[in-house]
Length: 318
Ligand code: ADP
Ligand code: MG
Image (cartoon, rainbow, N blue to C red; front, side, top):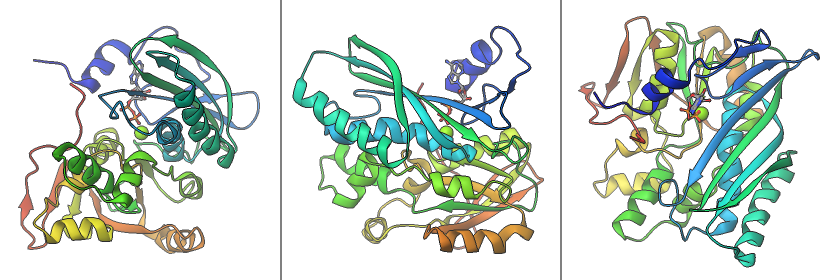
């Protein structure tokens, strides 16, 4: 059988080198958690964007600089961490000063607005690719937002709206007109840092949606050893996405296309009142989309209460 991304990681990289007692969480979540001599936990994550795989080679370099950092900050958000530093591995085919200036501008303005500092990296020549390692802090380990903490009965929520980035990608690959808003969601995602930090102590589990809701929620279900019921009719859509649906678009796009960079999280019922207060005070829209169950697997219902069997759950690299 062919190996996929996750079986490759599991087979070759899930246990490599020493088992350090100060590594509280290694391979398998949105980020690793490391004990330090302070009471805080150091959080580390890495994400890579490769030209023609993760973005069109002619993407606006300013947006690309923003996105390369944003996707990493989104993994810190999914742990409830506050970002601190990052390193930049930049591989470029040639020196193009204008391109570099715009790329740096997008990167640095998100770094500034999130109080994050570039502390090093590596610059090489080759096919265009950007790899960032982001580091941040968690106040404590016991309430970190792990993929493994979901419990039967938890309510499942997502932030923002889903499918806008997927719609932009769909329109771009079809060569059809692309909505400005959807394109912005694809090219300049907003990491949900404030929400992630506010969920500490409230949510039992969290993940950021980078590969499609069904795929990413699937990681929570596998790691938590639980199942879920999800209602397609409850998935939050933007007006642009609703418009696409009204014209006969595919509702599955919102739950299987990647690049949303919203958070999916599970909350026990006693914390829902506090969750609503937080969403209001952060002006962060959140939507209830279903519930965690003890029965394994993900059961997706359409608006007629019929089970939907998705052909795919999300983006797969291999
Ligand atoms: P995300 O989508 O949140 O970035 P991934 O699905 O890329 O997470 O990765 C899942 C887990 O596997 C993470 O803990 C990540 O650090 C780990 N991982 C991915 N690739 C490798 C690798 N080559 N070596 C070690 N760990 C890896
Ligand atoms: Mg992630």
